[in-house]
Image 1 (cartoon, protein in one colour):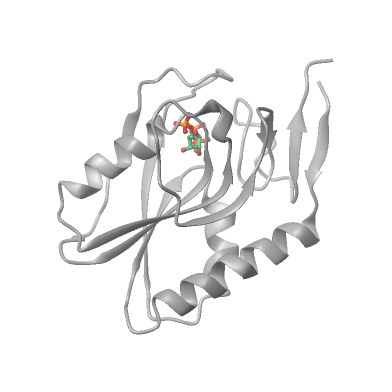
Image 2 (cartoon, protein in one colour):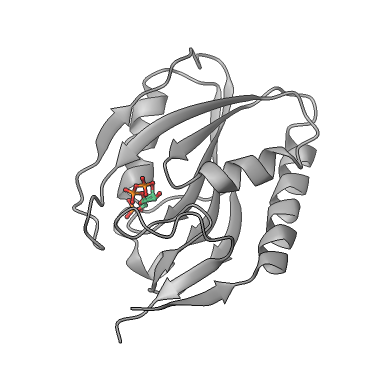
Length: 172
Ligand code: PRP
């Protein structure tokens, strides 16, 4: 099983800059709370925030649904919840990938219970053909076909997160 480059470094960087420019424009007068979903979103968040020219806060939640499998079990675990209060705040969810949409749907329910004033979703990769729950994405990096993707924070059984580009894994 050999990862093959799917999206190269320069294209990733251009896309992160494009998303940051949109967020800069939309939140100019605001102070959003960026909530990154661990573990997968850690590199995307780190690159994105360095292009944001805004007042902002960063928070994390840790959710897990895949474990050692390549297929979502459809059951999301809240491994670590929010440490701060988001009531009346403008929230931007930062996700590495939306596949079935089950994780994001779970997170939206969890966050909505805390009564933020708004929630938008910023995701690097979407796989629309895999969707089981409809999700409205406000800031989208790439739409990709149904391939298993690793690198740039995304793992397969905790491997490959450190790779600097996005790779697809195909069965040989
Ligand atoms: C991945 C990814 C998303 C979720 C998307 O997380 O980071 O949170 O799957 O899949 P879905 O749309 O089918 O729900 P994972 O559970 O693999 O944990 P990780 O972020 O720690 O890698």
